[in-house]
Length: 192
Ligand code: GRF
Image (cartoon, rainbow, N blue to C red):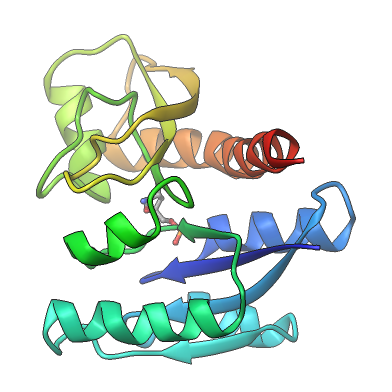
């Protein structure tokens, strides 16, 4: 079975979409482990689903945090690392070791509205401020830059009259919950 390790920092609704689809066998993989870089509901969701969850400390040195993550995912024979709302920046050594086996989901149509500091509600605020007519979400491979790796798939949503950043965020999130499992399925089928 294709084994996934998911890294989270927040609510973990994207993690939940992977758990649900793997449990219903729509997605042919096993969420083997979930790692949080802080206490967060994402790790709780894992435990509720009977998946091993670890809470690490994001305040330790980046290098040390990555070494701890590497130890856990290496020992468990993880095939793919999924960053699902993971806010710590991964160090270069880790990215190089896991190149092609680590993906991220971002709530905009990259390369637009990505890069350092572009996360959470800020992304949607920037989209509205720029007067965009559409937004969306992107799943991409992680490289040594921020939100700059090869794009795997995207989904688009319309920006509507009267949208607030929060309303747009919700509309994009609905698509994220479809895009992430679909992207993982694509990777699994390519590896077969
Ligand atoms: C999502 O919008 C994702 O694109 C971004 O962080 C958010 C995480 O949401 N990287 P959740 O924790 O999966 O609910």
